[in-house]
Every structure is written in C-alpha cells, then in structure tokens.
Length: 512
Image (cartoon, rainbow, N blue to C red; front, side, top):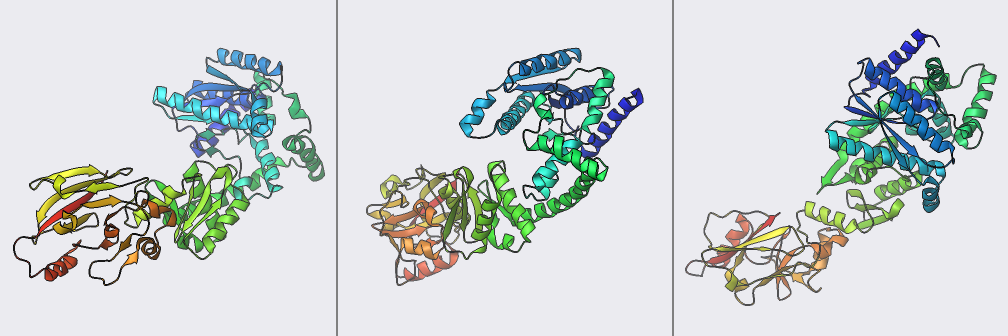
C-alpha cells in the first residue's frame, strides 16, 4: 500500500463516518483487542484526530477475557505499548469469561460479548459523568463482518434487521470501518509497520463465523470468480434503504398507538390490530425494548404469543409468560409488558387512567367529625398511596366547585361513627353500593366487573364507606350527597323541607 493509499483510507473513513454522523460526540472510546481490526481502528481515529479532521478525544478500552493463557497477556502488553506511543489513555479490564459462561450456561463467545458491551457502557457512563461530554464507543467491524453476519443470520431465518447488521450506529456504539475490507486494514498496518496480534483460532474452521470466513466464502469466490463480500455489500446497502423506510413508518405507527400510563408505555390493541404484520411485529418489539431496555431473548415464538393475545377477543385480564419471568398483559384495549410480579402495578395504572384511585396496600383511614375543626381543615395521608385528603366543614351554598376528586358529604353521614377511606386490601368483602337516587344496590366487586376495572387492580381501588355501604367511589359516583351541579339540585330538592343552613363535609383528594 502506497502513501497515497494510506491517505485514501483516512478519507474514506472520514467521509463514511461524517455521512452517518458517527463523530457527533466529545469522546470516542475505542474497543481494542490487539488484533489487526481494532489496532487499525485506533490508529486511524488517532490519525484523524492529529490531522484535526475530528474534534473528539480518543480513549482506549481493552477487555482481557483470559481464554488463551499467555497469549491474552501478550496482547495486553502490545496494546499498552501502542497506546503509549500514540499518547492514548488506556483502561484494561479483566474478566473470568469461562466462569461467566459456565454460570449462565452460554458459550464463551456469547459470554465475552456480553461482558465487553457491559464494560463499554459502564466506562462510557463514567467518562460522561467525569467530563460532561457525550461518549461513543467505536468497535472495529468491517465489510467482511457485514457479509459473514448477513449469511449467518440468513440461514438462521432472519428478517431485515438481521440482514442489515452490523449497523453504522447502534445506540452509543459506532462502526467507522464498515466502509473497508479486512485486507485493506491489514495492508494499512503493514505499510506503516504497526504491530498487531493474530488470534490463531480465527484461522480455523471452528465456529460458524470462521467456517463462513475460511471455508464457504473462498469456495463461493472460486465458483463465481468474485469476492462474495462485494455483492453482499451491495445487497446490504439496498436492504439498508428498505429498512430505513420500514423503520420510519413503523416508528410512526408505534407512536400513533402508544400511550404512557404513569411512566409505563402501553399499546392500543385496536390500533395495532389494524397494522400490517410487519408493522405490528415491530410495534410489539419497540414496546418490549422501551419497557425493558433491550431485545435480548425476545424471539419469534414470543412475538406470536403476543399476536394471539392482541388478536383474540377481550375477556377481562389475560397474562402470558415471557422470557426472564416477564409478562405480556392485556386488559380490554390495553396491551403492555411487565416484570415478574408487576402486572398488578400495570393494572393499577390502567385503573388510574380510567379515573379511579389506587393504594398499593391497606389504605384504611378513619375520618371522624370531632377531628374536623369548625373553622378550619385537617390534612391526612391515605396509607400506602400518593393520595392526600383535605377535610373541612362548609355550608351548602350555590357557588361550589365540582370534580372527580371532590365530594360533599352530608353532616349526618359522618356524625355517628365517622366514615372510612379504604380499599379491599384493608376491608372485608361484601361491601355494597347504591348510587344516590337509585333504588337498588350492587355488590362492590360486581360493580367493578361491570365498570371493567382490571381484576388485579380491584383490591387497590380506594373508596369511602360506612357500615358496609359505599358512600363514595371516586371515578364512579356517590351514594349520598353530591359531586356535581345536577346531583346537587336533586339533593336540595330532596331536602327542601329542611330549615336553616345545611352543613356539609368537604373532602378533597390531592395526588402527590
């Protein structure tokens, strides 16, 4: 490789990276193993930095997995020397990759990848905290990796996402060398006399990737008289455009059908039902990723289960098992995911969105007339909730405010024995409610069924009762008194024969 070809390498990497916005950050951490790919990446990025083509500070991170005794330590020393010569700060982390693989029943290759990417993220977060700069992590995937990954995923039955992989940008991970072949990187290093390590296991046919690299691709090249990575790179570029279009459209569909309930993202069942299967599958995957932060082990079988859950007829709550003990949850038009043991929290958020109030545990709270000052108010917290009560005495005058969190309780309802704020967690069953003006009453749990409150949220629903009768169910209505202008007129008409001022207990609920 001539000097002008070396300069061309710089230009190609810079042009490719700028077109993808890879260097829009303050710090680049280069993942270095000591092999030719990562050594070339570090050397090229440092060269671009020295030429003022990029403004990012360059750091290096090396993970020693200790899988090849002796060789791994030699590679660490090689990288230390390289970073010293180029004035690059290096951080080396040691891992028991074999032990981690055995403990988690995974391959050593998978274990190494998990440990590396966790280390990348933690180091990047630490640098961001220390410097205040945005940090990205550069890894040394190149054109050959595109071809190998594409074929491996194709024969696993992958969709577009698997065929367009690796991508130039994945979160904070960037891949500036996807525009170059491995042979170009090796020639670059050899021309400049830069030392690098050679992992002898990469030269064997052990492992799927090595088989494609060292056996299958050479045979395809002989048959077609062309390096197979070239047409596969063209296919990758065409599919990338298709994926960009599909991704943009699916994100728009996801946003149109997504709602956030107290910080928990959910989807409209009716909305995603109407989507094309390609859009529907992506919407569900986006929801999983937004809920849990990753797509690890969310497979086609799980996706089909979610399809069935959404496409079936609604019959109350339905919960399906997902990877890692997580759950897929549906109630009426709401579909979401939850961690193990957290479906009740999601159900409570749905109930809250319907206008009802919830408390996680026993919400029992006694309100007695003697505790309420005649010319003031008391403020009390409903236990195990984010709800606060402000209770005061007022006269029934014309100018009153009304909302779902306000109740005007007749004095006689609280005079003897007081009333109790509570929920099923703190009260026995058998409670009944007769809505003001109605002749008949209904058992509370039956009423909640009719109101389509999620079953796993019903024990959390807050109400006000006395002697087994519900006096007020926020979100539904009251049994005595009034909560709006219309019911107030009926209340006044029913009490027309009463003389003098009509004193009320005003109970206002505030969310904290």
